[in-house]
Amino acid sequence: MDLASIAVELYALTPDEFTAARNARAKEVGGTGDKELAKQVKTLPKPSTAAWLVNMLVSRRREETDQVLELGAALREAQDELDPQQLRELSRQRQQLLAAVIREGRALAAELGHPVSEAIGAEAEQTLRAAMTDADAAAAVAGGRLVRSLTASGLEPVDLSGAVAGPLPSVRSARTGKPAKSTRPKVVEEPETAGKRRAERADRAEKRRAEEAERAAQQAKAELERAEKRVEKAEAEVEKAEQRRQDVEARREELAAELAELKERIRELDKDIAAVDREADIAQGVQDEAEAALGKLQAEAYRARKRLDQL
Image (cartoon, rainbow, N blue to C red; front, side):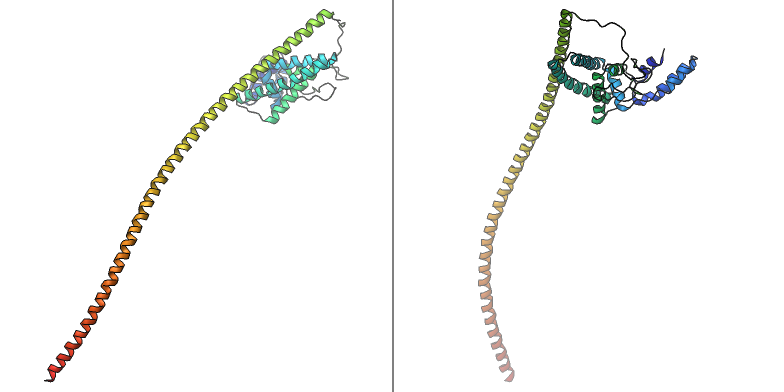
């Protein structure tokens, strides 16, 4: 058991599990008598969120991560061979593959209960892009022990200082920071071997394109299903609204009919009132004449009573 293997286990955990698991592991190692290793385990830093996301892809989505690193190796080889057509094609594939892998990584983070933002996704993509440009950075990513994100800057090697928990997967020159030169003699490939290797790369590229097309088709199918469900829901809402409109219009027609009946009744009542008013006028005239006649009779009766009293 060494620091690197312990770090691989710890950096495959979720952020809320890391600290307790690291301390428990250090205590366990200390119990075996290896105090120095226990101290190293105890001081393993918690990874940044972007580094954790890349570690999760390495530990839980290894096939997708390997595709990224293999494509990076193919890109570096195409650059070495100065193959512009191959570079253009591989660069296009890089964009598509990185976007797909980061989407998968963010979905994985959400499944693990630790969703990440677009900014963190972009930082993780930057790390994978750096791994595609530099063989040592690729080895660092593949180790699954990243502590921080990586950045590629031009033609300079990716800075891996403090980026990996435990020893670096490859050795760099202490003076220049560049990968140590190999002492093995350079092997010159035969044309047939080189052609076979290019054919294999082309086959892998074709396989990746097919896989990407399949993923795109599945995604399109899922989006179509979601769209169809939304259409069905919208159609149901339209039908419901149409029924409501018809009910309202029917009620309006009923009220309009009642209003027409009421207007007709009002016209009839207006006629009845006018007739009663005329009758009232006639009755008032009769009453006035009767009151006048009564007044005359009362005056005559008064005069007659007075004459009688004088007799």
